[in-house]
Length: 303
Ligand SMILES: Cc1cc2nc3c(=O)[nH]c(=O)nc-3n(C[C@H](O)[C@H](O)[C@H](O)COP(=O)(O)OP(=O)(O)OC[C@H]3O[C@@H](n4cnc5c(N)ncnc54)[C@H](O)[C@@H]3O)c2cc1C
Image 1 (cartoon, rainbow, N blue to C red):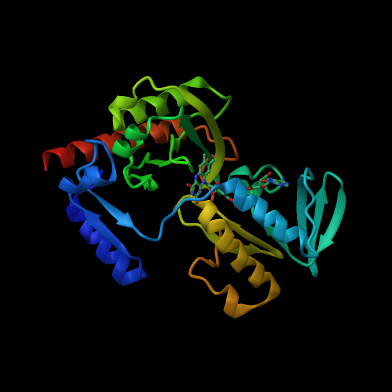
Image 2: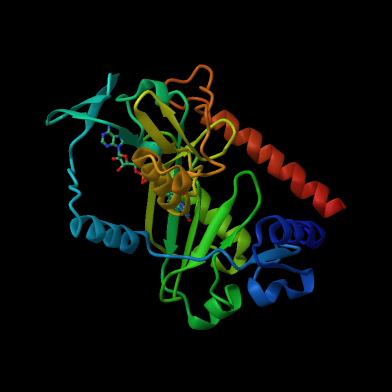
């Protein structure tokens, strides 16, 4: 929940510093964008859009297939060692030697690289999909059929489905194991808090995956020996990973000009204390974030 005044500040920053087109939405205009009483204003950013990730992946696989590159599915990397002139990589199906290794395992980083694993916290992100809604309901709740997100620490992101007939509502899952019904029920109640008329609405789908958070929440590429890493997208890797992966590839090719980036760091993200792959602290962090969000909400309602 953000105030229009904050939106104006953000708009100015986005425009002046980054050249991004954006405009603030005053309280009276909120219903033109979203049918909820929860927000007192907002910001429309013209640089953000939506896509179907499966189609993006299919297109990328098509590009790889039409080149000389080879994809080896179902071949886990078990470990790697930097040696003179390259990296020795042990996989489930044998050993290879490469001049460089590019690691892009983000929230799925497993024991093959314990050093990296201590630096990336895997966090579950989950989406629920409502059953098809009447057109008038969609017209009222999401008039322009845009992509939406809020600025809470435990933020939600949501959108109409590609055909505009249902709502896909996503957020941090909170669970660390199993496929519990509780995170689905929680998202469902948050959806109803945003759109009270959807209380009790049927869901047709729910799914989750892992995103990687790091201590400063900044995605980056960095190197260690002959291994280059592009990772830590903090939940926005559909956008970031394509771009940073390309920069990292240019870095490996030795193209200083094309690989130049403010996100090319000398140092890796700092290791997370007392963490070696099992994010035992997530429930604690989530309750701190929830308390923070509640405090911010109260402060803004008062002010
Ligand atoms: C529900 C949900 C909603 C999301 N919504 C958005 C969104 O709206 N916008 C956005 O920008 N991003 C979004 N994301 C985040 C985005 O999906 C990720 O940030 C992105 O997929 C990261 O891309 P990646 O290629 O770096 O890693 P991933 O897509 O996570 O792929 C990592 C790969 O590494 C492989 N791997 C791991 N260890 C090994 C090993 N030892 N050997 C071999 N392979 C290994 C894994 O199998 C996996 O295929 C969302 C994520 C989820 C789960």
